[in-house]
Image (cartoon, rainbow, N blue to C red; front, side, top):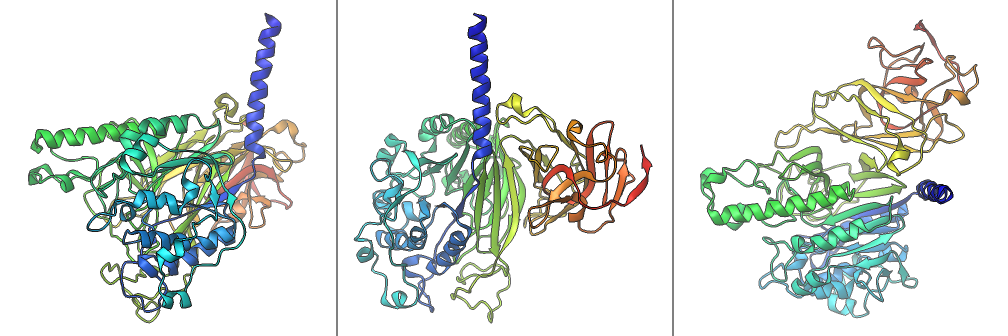
Length: 618
């Protein structure tokens, strides 16, 4: 019995080490996200955007994906503006640049594909699966660069466009990206919807199509898919990522219809005293609703509770959507208050933009908002860590559609209905780690937090238990949404194993910078280190301390990356009188600390320069 118990214990420990190794050994890889590639006007003086497809924007963003060496691209819907077979086939042809670079392309229907037009485009589900065979579970699943041969004749792209901005010619053979494809077959068949999921490397991708056969706005098939959603996410391999995509939002800024259906305002003639529905019924006077209206809201809230509970239980950190034509990162809480998830509404890649407005639910806490820019996203999967880089044009306020004005347009630089050559810049970097924690910090609140839970106990990685703490600092951001709601900071920690250069595990810290800035509020970061592996000359001499990486990826003193401040070493613990640039070692607690104003990767490591010593301390 004792031998059997020891054998089982060895197996468990071996499995833990194997899982740890899978995290550690997985090479980082990237995928891209693009959204709402709609050309919204029939006028196109440059002859670049056929059949309501914003090809002039698509080609520029696809080149960014190619340059970034992403493995696949997800499109979160509204690939065209006017849903039709001709438009859908046209959009498929403009994915060829990605295929030629051996990048997979995985689209999701939006409302403009699903049932747009009069009469509704009810054949869109079948057409979508035909023109993108890679999304259909079965023989062709994952097989990209396999666009059917009749696509060009159906698309019938005008000669003027073929002369100025044609789709790329096909090169190379079909190739597979992803495996283990699945779909909620009963729902897809009954409603002609096109949900699907697949795995790639250490991640599961789930693309949720909510649309009925002939409805684009008011209903949702997600409740009928919930069992498939739960099973697909819960059965994925342990210690892997999961990303859920939808076209409509959990709670939109401009659109109040959402993933779980229309809002009450769009479905009923409400008593004005009931108030406006922000999408989840928050703030409404329920006593002013009829029994039918109240039942509709109750059913929707139950579906929202179930969906968000599934996301939280299955460690889905982001639900990524389009539809609202602006960049918006927020935290959405379920109506019952029990679950929450980040929603990332992706920036417009079309010739129109939307302006968010009231009412908004208190169940939606804004983190970042960016309006009226063309943009895209690159996600980097690095074991348990996920880094989200948001890029957008540096000009902003460009549009090609005078029916959707936003801000002031410079007619010389950006004439109407002519797409410029965009200069894309990084607007923000956010992220999380499955082995870290998150703290939501409202305006004026303290950043203070501690992450010292044993990672080995969580069975997510097997670090020795390096601890970190933010000892001081306050969210001093003045950023607000366009409707005046203050943004919060979603501060996330993540861990990677120590290297031969560090004497602690490596901490990644996200979420403290404002949109468009690399700097943060001033704060104090402390990390523990393994004093048993250090030489006496390193301890307390200023030759070892809190380190971060420079532009070349080398470990340097963390205060070297500060914006301002004076470098000053202290032998001893931190106290509140120390200013930006002060750093030190506390020999009693075996911690290194620094007063800094930037995020990034941190560890305790040695320096190759002599410090400037301060009096005080031990």
